[in-house]
Image 1 (cartoon, rainbow over the protein chains, first blue to last red):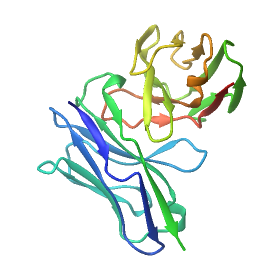
Image 2: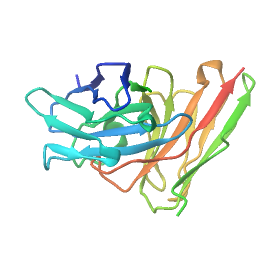
Image 3: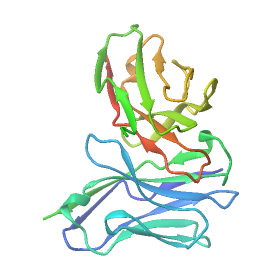
Length: 117
Length: 113
């Protein structure tokens, strides 16, 4: 079955320490992968996306993610957390590259990131 | 360029009432979608549209109707509200293929009593 799994529902780190949010996917195709961020009471905003070009993708606000096909993973990292990074993060997989249908986009259940002062 | 707009921001309904959530985008996007967000479940697709006059069901379509008479607008109708429809609703649009970024509206928080 095709799916996306965010391995942690909640991650808490201290300000200035590294952030790791984990995402694994299952797909019969080479997927497109996205990370979106949702700040409290706001809509979702794109952080970064992988669409079969470079496997290491850099996004906004210092975040990056690496696509590892052998591990079927697309983990999100940031070297040094900032208080403003506190938000909910969603890993999203688009299962059929180039296929024109919103029904092929699957959201993970989300990871809430908390930052300790 | 306002992006994706949604109205209202908040709504309280009684069981059995009907209402329409409005969504509009000014980016000339062909693809528009409605999602609901519930705690611990991510976003689930309700209905989507690949262009004016074309709509299709997503993962959780029961109790909702949509139409797409123009490229800009994609309203979501609740026919007879139920407490299970208490949720936050997001509208999104994108320019085409699944490799494209989705742009989300600010959401509508709906409570059904």
